[in-house]
Image (spheres, rainbow, N blue to C red):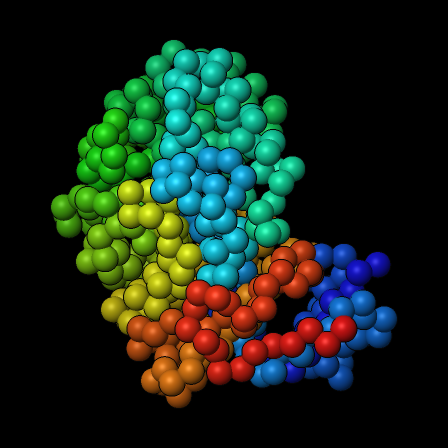
Length: 387
């Protein structure tokens, strides 16, 4: 039995918007899953195989990037960059979800080829986790000619997500809706490209097509990069029950509009975060933290709730066993503190002023993966593994 005890925690972010802060100074995980949390004196801390002294910093569920474009291993040919996933882990991200392996050179678009690549991508990230990060990959981009049996075959092979609808040859709502329905029948989630074209080969996806297609996630509702007009974004927020995915590689003004509209409609639980990288804008190791700080500062969202956009909201919308402080959920955490010399009375207050926190440690499946981040501003206090 592997038992991790994290002591001297300042506060815990739960990942739950309805109750985002937990007053507790200790958390215990067993065999990679959360077992208990509360006051240390009330918990069974005996027999620990690993002990972390949090030094009074904040513990959050590991951040989730809902929109990445991986290709193979920890390499992206789009930017000719190695170790981008490891670098993103240093930004507190412990789980990633593919929106399609679209930057693979020579990406096959015939039905046999696209299924083969999707199944292979699902397998290689299942078998190899860069720096321990959980990458849910193998997201096929739908193409004309696919039939229901293709989705049944993909799902049986372990594929759980579709790549962005609209990046392939299917660009009309009726055909896309049929394929999304087949995918949903076999337990696969779907995402749609929203807004103007991002790279040659993609195209405009407007609100009417998003609504007609009916995907589970409105991918980069704030554009990737070019956003839809304000009235169409508001229409999507008013009409759809899908997740409103806000990305770093999008329009910041449209991101704030989405949050403000979702708040007015009582739909903030539908807001989730992604980076939409690697892409033309490159790789954003701190992209999720930057979105949390930006939406908190300019969207007037308390920081503890803004963290939920990148943790529990995404976990619930994506049906993941990470991102929430729940018994039995994966022990994936990021330990954060106010950055040195950053304004604000606390880490959360500093984030509300638009500042990035410092990452002092990441933990995945109850195992310490990184110490002080090489990418964030240095934290005031740094947790220490003492056993």
